[in-house]
Image (cartoon, rainbow, N blue to C red):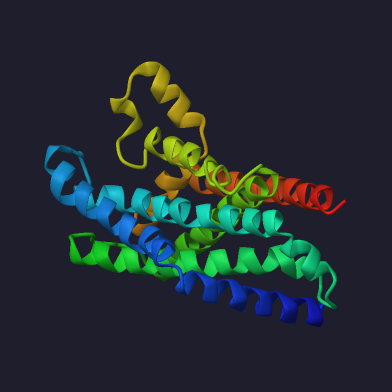
Length: 252
């Protein structure tokens, strides 16, 4: 276990160096979520009318989730590059823990996305976000974001392993963005047409966004907390298992 953790951290540092050398990755992970926040705050925000919250308070939870979804797409791209170039086979010929090969990418994704979340949160404070959370609410919100990032990362790992080319490896992220835009992340569900509202209520992004918003604004999260935890944990476990299956299938 000690060697597996050490190898995972070495692999994570290797991937982290690749991220810092990639300008387009930095733009996608940091600049795009900030631009989306500023657009919703200053361009669209004036036309948005919420009964209780300001526009900045309402949309920030959705922007944080969008930041994670933007960031995890590169995990699929990097893993598929490893597949196409035979890098996995090279790693298998080395005396390292096999679990570190995927684990390093997962750890890197969580670290880089949490950094992105913190930056977006700080910009949110500058443009009018007023959190009312206590220490416990901040801790629970951080746990939700970590679980959400882990869940989205394992989805990315799976699609990176099964994609036929690097060009198609990150296409799945557009589906995740679509789920977020058809949720309560940026608009209340009750303002949507009946059919669309029914879909928005029962898909995973809505309870996660509602839970995160309630926690950050000091409101009772209610059942959305347990539903959000269940969705994040369920997705994480399911796609971890699928990723292990896809990895073993690739290595045959």
